[in-house]
Image (cartoon, rainbow, N blue to C red; front, side, top):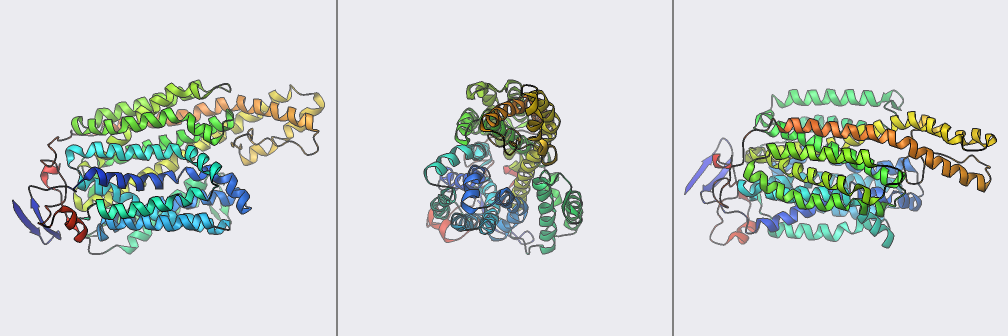
Length: 579
């Protein structure tokens, strides 16, 4: 037994060994998974409710885009700051505060009577989500020993993947049965239970507290991330040009880059930087962060195309589209925990490289098999490959990124890692969406002219006029929109129906040569991630539970672990054995 105090590092006395973990770390993990599931589900489930919300609130698509994007903007922009707040006040405290804010904002979302109220409530939801998300990685690193951490991250990331792809299915069920308000109201009891269970089951771990929060650094980092995320989210809608007056997307990107450079220069001079530069010199953290960005790029880029394929091309409802994704969801949730456990035993290098290759192979299969006559059964095999690849890559990435991070840097590391995930997702949706739109702008007019040849000569000009807005506004990719075809006013009903049939066939002919390059981008980026995976070094250090490799709280006093966990925070720091 050894008690120590390091006044310069500000670490309270710790006792090693032994270093017992939380009374039941797996129960604590379930609480963290609940919070993770709810906030990531809200990035996709709200899309399903957009038509109902537009009718209920009597508003247009511009407002609805901000209902979707306001949440993402707040979430992605505040993750780094939230990671440092966890260092200041304790990750469990900030986790519970985030869940509470998310619950209150969910009530406000469901009760909104105008688009402005709903947008504001969604931004507050994003703030709560940003507070919650980084703390989970810190807590998992603290309550699980190194020999079990990969399995824990595997379960945690499997939940994240399921949340990302199950939004349309759950959203369709809730909206059909209860109405769009209930996709928000159902968050409230789950978040309330999460706060109570976190207080009871999750230990109050504390790392070395920073003396202060660099407010200027916070402002620069937030400005850089807000600018970057705004440009990625809104760029395609503004055709990557002017937003308002002299302000355009290129200017916003330049301003974000300037803020990012100023932030990096400032961090080099701070004693307690928001993002310590040394973090990226730790073994595997930099390549794992890049792989995180790449994996998220692949997920959201592929998910965007999958939803458009199944709904716009194949005519599935949101619920049917979600059910078609079940092979992906089920396999992902089964493989990720196993992959995490294998990472504990073998290390993540080969598992990640192989997983990303299988992931890319599944996406390639989707690109090759899609036809206007495809069904859900057509995609079972490639979706299984996507699920295997995602499950084999997401969990090991998180494990390798956090493996060598010392406790005082855990909050900053979690913030950076989650920021990379959100930026990668926004970048994937923006790039893949842009490729798809631009290819459709080329292929759709040609397909429309070929379709017009099937109509009577006197009807062809009016039919082509129905596609006139596509080139300037971009193809509309919602279900039943046929790329944005508009039946000319005054068209007789019989001819209008013929127009729509030919337009749908033209859209299908144009979509296939457009979707394959878009998915090709995803394949290329995933294979690039596999090259990053080959840069990972080292293997996991397996050890018995509670033995070497544990990075956990100190021993509880005689009053018992549960009593101490609720009575006062537990201080912890990582020792050489953890690495």
